[in-house]
Length: 396
Image 1 (spheres, one colour):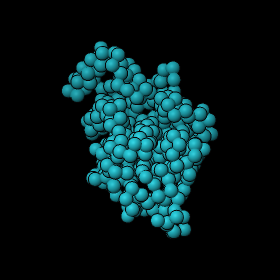
Image 2: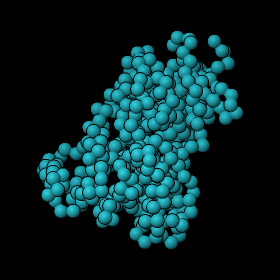
Image 3: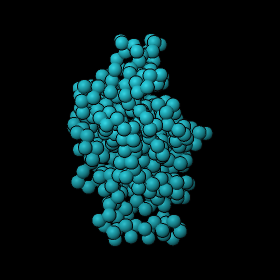
Image 4: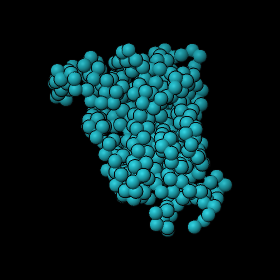
């Protein structure tokens, strides 16, 4: 054994919200943790975080670059529905600063940081896997550990090497441009409103967005259609919103998973979290809350394994997540598959969003991350209204 090789209880691969949260919580529990991150990369993201995330993960106010108090749903006809967020707001963060703040919090909790690209896991010595990673100068670093948390994104190298069929994860490719907010805001823009655009020329199977970030804004779109030009669509979206001459701060693109993997652990020494596990909500594309929750659950599972020595403990991360949110993901997946299929259905979908019952239940579910059951009559009303739109009996 290499006596100079550092020894850790856990190595967390990936320093986004999932990995940083997992590293923080494992370190706070008294474990020796290495947080390995590639560095220099920012994920394309609208940056919306609901109140539950702010509350559950103690996000300070200074990390919020804006507060959205309204969502505008834009139909193919350009008709729109404004949905106010009554008595609250959705926080907006800039991932460039938010992710680094999370990594710093993990380091303050005791996690050791390293910058490098995951290469693989060497299991030559039983019960002493060694994580290998490539440094910027081309050399290879090593870290001995007992458990690995893969939080390295939708095309996770950790998952591909250790979890069967991980490469089959369905994805939407997202692209956005961070723009400097013009000193004279274009007509129709509001600094406390998130615009969600359901138009086929902006995305044939997902949606486009214009989200406020205070001094900047995120303008983006996504699609699983490989022949669709996301850059052209964003250019069109910018033009539609009078932002074609706004200064571009940076451009980012990445795959976004649309379905949780059927297994998150290898039954031995690896467990996944965040995009690597596929926990981005279908239809909405929301991922930050689910990534941080996934990181928390992966940390709990890894800690239980480290204390008890039973690899079966790693399975609990997925079990607990799906027990809490599997039904929401299932409903959103069906909604995306049906309503996002063509412009006629998108038009009807936006029309449905005018309904007060739909607005109330949707935002309660988003803000609090649960399907609301306390209003059975509202659910029944929504069912019949939805059915009328499905059958084409409702006016658009």
